[in-house]
Image (tube, rainbow, N blue to C red):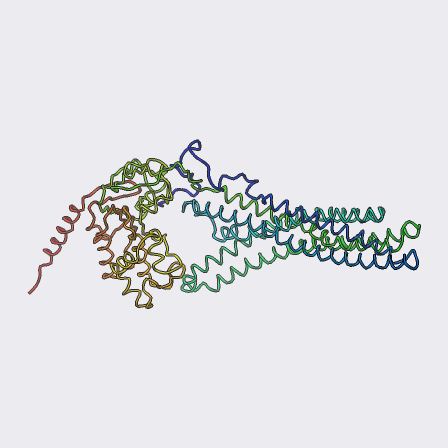
Length: 598
């Protein structure tokens, strides 16, 4: 094992007192999910405007109803008739204004939610970029995808349609209740009582909704993770004849997810039914109270109809407020999952006080470097410009040597010194400009061959790209699968080209830009002899310090120095010339045992 435990805290980071906190990573939890004040006040203003329009509409409608029964004759009746027509025109204008305000409200609330989600997604991605491979060992890909997609979507629903639209709905509801009380306080009281009972009934389903949402999320994560794994390992499933077994496994997971989704849907349907039922029962309660009041002679039938109209106007607001509980539960669970992810192990925010790594000569010194389970007190020096071969059996810790230089693993003890700079005291983001690396865990990216070759050396010229491509023979190898050469499009991981081509492109990516330090982890695996010769020649022409993990005798023979590791301990440092002499002696001895026959 060449990596520390997944929960081991990264070492070599600056003390907290030395950090100058920057970026969204240091934002307080309450600020992470905060909607902008402009959006909040905008929604409040829109809610007040809608409430004013609704109140004006009801009161003006009441006036029009009164004018339906003329109180005068002749000129007075004509004047009341004209007033009724003007009032109807104003009612139409208020209706149009109310529709426009609701359209603007929806746009503003959705835009505000998207802004928060965008900010959170970038903060989460920045946190993901700071995570070491060890931090991701026990994280399912499905869970990570759910954090960055589904959780943010549910959170947006709570912010946009729960908080903001709920705020506007509450203002509109208050305005409608004011109108109801102006018309008839007994009917308004019955309306308010039914709405209150509906709110209590909605709140009573809270615990069940929270539990169902958590179960649904967990099962969805399992399904997403399984599908992601099967996409990456489809060939393994087919070769092993396990397509039927994997189909059955996904079917069981899918059935379990479907049951959880149905349970959530039932609870959400109950909430929606409560909202609709509350609105309808409120209308019935208003009518019943109106019947009683009309029998007593306290109100006119027209007033009862107006109260019913008020109750129907409030249907949307009641429904929005009723669904707030659903949005709140889903948003709360998602919010906690997002916070858990942001609190998980990572390097932490990169301090602006950290100096960039500046490699001048390329001297690499390991001072008592320890990585739990991989290296035990490694102390050795790589001279500037030398080719150092690192060899040993599986699990010897050779890969960990490269990983600590690339800062894919932070040592649990000791220090790596590059040109008198403690690597732990340098900016991690500057490592890529000084180091080129080839390894089995560094796949190709989606895009052209040129994009992959220049991925870490963006300023490389077309001439440099052509030099590396020709030197590795990429034009001939890629020409077998297409005529585009370095403009050939690669799918994710480069799966549309041969393994040998992928390996050559990876070697070219490491060499591009002439980085002063080159880290090679079995770089020529899968290459044919001709391609291996070309790639080895390119590496040996490289001007810089090379750390090269290999067990190939031909590669070892090209090294200036050979480090032999066993169980994470450096057991031998051998000069390359001594190794070549041993190889020559061994070869001559074998030839002398089998003399040529005539």
